[in-house]
Image (cartoon, rainbow, N blue to C red; front, side, top):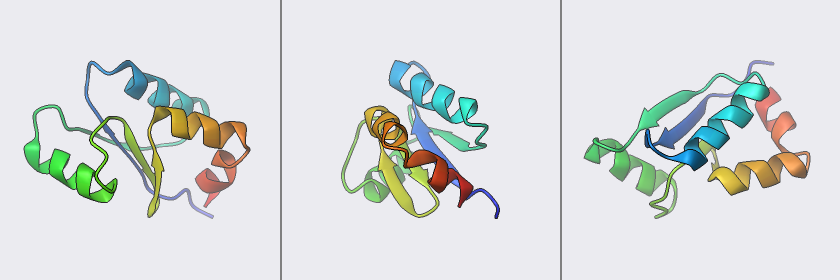
Amino acid sequence: MAQPDITIYTKGYCPYCADAKALLNRKGATFTEIDVAADRAEFATMVQRAGGRTTVPQIFIGATHVGGCDDIYALDARGGLDPMLKG
């Protein structure tokens, strides 16, 4: 089964974004990164998709909103990330 699409909304100077991307990279996951620092339209899209959350990163695996950096690490610690990445 193919890996689901992964989207991570970031800002370039965000250490939490770097940590979340590092986890996904360690898992061998490919993802689309959207930098919202200077793009108001993409920022608005992120806020809408994330249910009003305005912090970065915001991570989506397929249609599922995982949340931010702490959320994806907690998901991994519970053993829930790998199955999501496998689809």
